[in-house]
Image 1 (cartoon, helix red, strand yellow):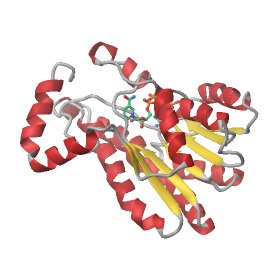
Image 2 (cartoon, rainbow, N blue to C red; image 1 turned 120 degrees about the vertical axis):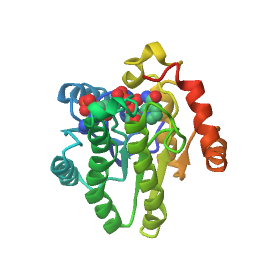
Image 3 (spheres, helix red, strand yellow; image 1 turned 90 degrees about the horizontal axis):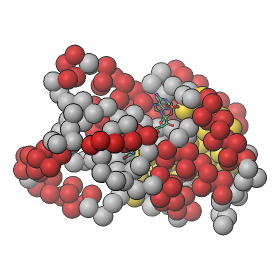
Length: 257
Ligand SMILES: NC(=O)c1ccc[n+]([C@@H]2O[C@H](COP(=O)([O-])OP(=O)(O)OC[C@H]3O[C@@H](n4cnc5c(N)ncnc54)[C@H](OP(=O)(O)O)[C@@H]3O)[C@@H](O)[C@H]2O)c1
């Protein structure tokens, strides 16, 4: 099983969950991997699993909420090489309703920091280098709920919607420079992100399944990877936003905070 030999794949949020599974899947296809997240020990453990597959792995610890650190991490990546693929996967979900955020306004700054602002600050220098080379691929992981109202999750869906919109704007802009942009919008995935809320979660798919989708997109770039129901839900939401919002609230309120 090969296809990514000699390719340099940069993955944020690679210390666990979807990012770690993607790193191992890329290694199984022969790709070299740069792993980023905050947790150095977890990154080292994933790097060891990657190297077992006979490829190279580098670890760059970074807190993407800190703008200057995000940019410095991108420069550190470029010291290794110009990436062939950047998987902007790091994310943090805060399930907090509007009124709870009154006392916790940091819910918004923390969510925007990692899910949007720090991520695009990190991607910027890498995209510039890929544009200069005239080839590359950016894969952004948003969420199936980036375009559908999800009451009780304002900070998360707002920050993911910002990243999703940015990716949609970036796609055509960068295509002229030989850069592919793919948006991955997973629904529920069984990672630490949802296990922390296990009591109100349904069963999701395995992170390895999303990793396989991301590797599939690396081998054959496509504009988006979404569950089948995202597009009809998006159309319904555009046609009848208040009805859809009320319906989603009625269905999810038992699980909402
Ligand atoms: N799980 C789901 O149901 C689901 C559904 C839709 C979309 N997604 C998206 O999929 C992506 C991966 O999520 P996951 O499910 O694999 O969750 P996860 O297991 O919690 O992994 C999140 C990753 O992001 C990193 N991260 C968090 N905050 C960071 C920060 N400030 N700076 C740098 N890295 C940071 C974490 O590492 P450290 O803590 O070590 O920094 C970790 O590697 C996220 O963008 C998430 O929003 C997940």
